[in-house]
Image: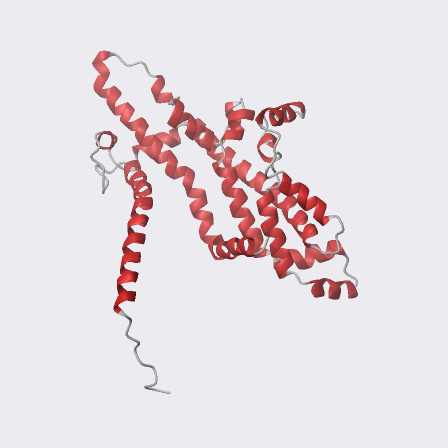
Length: 304
């Protein structure tokens, strides 16, 4: 029916409230976004201008020297490839452990699900500590191997709880009963029915575990002494904290102070470039799982 829809005039108080909220949220967004924006523009600006504090809102003296120096450093390129392998390997192991465990604990006909669930939850509050864990890793021969980074903690209890809730709310018992009537056993039901229906939670787990592996450096700092096995984040820490880049090993004389200043500024620029490079894989993956992200978070928050 035409003409039945009338424009509803909003109250003045609502307009004022929405305006204030918009201003506050915009201000908070700028506070969060500006440091990220500053890193980006600093990575493509002249290193002298960056060190002099001239880069504030826009790049000054556009250059890609920072990125060129990063890719010239073999340890950084090797660390990037190592992180890719560790992330793929670790996430795959996490999924192989978490999804079957979550599904088993979501089934009401599994008699031991309550004590096993309590056992897993207990580990969220009580842990052996760093030294006992290191002794276990050492005694099992995992030191200086990537297995030391992916096997300990291969099951995230929080992620398991989120996945278990997903299976409880999205895989009805009637579906399993119908499959059993057709002669489908538990294994076939899990492989051919449950997994195809679990794309959302699988994407969420891939995001959680993948980002965790990609950003992790502390485990590598403890368990990996061979630099050829270092992940990218440990190389980044080495540059940011220890300043152990190849360029810092050069011996400068008094007559080369200007060149030293340029090299130091370029080293600072490399830090910004390396931060951007280390963030690229996560930025690439996130849009593909964004549509599942809110659903996965809500699953874990509504029911436990």
